[in-house]
Image 1 (cartoon, rainbow, N blue to C red):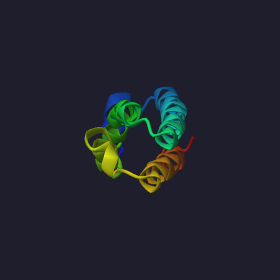
Image 2 (cartoon, rainbow, N blue to C red):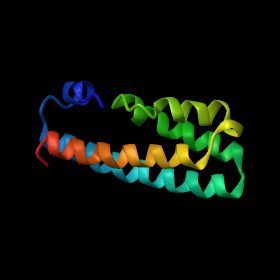
Image 3 (cartoon, rainbow, N blue to C red):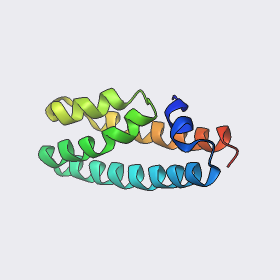
Length: 104
């Protein structure tokens, strides 16, 4: 994870950073929950759309599972639940790391 972009846009504003973390946690959690449900239902088109929604946040933090989201978006038929769970795990870890890094 790379926090340099978040550092640059926040200009050290702890309230902004905290709001970003809360928003990331809420949005990524909601999208990933929906993605798991969609995947289990076999709705690949919706899975593609949800992966697309997740990409900007993953990219902003340079999370390694950005590649996974791109793959689900572009080739959902080649994805699997383990990939979704990996994204979920990385997003959860990112929240903890951001809170620790920014002492929140």
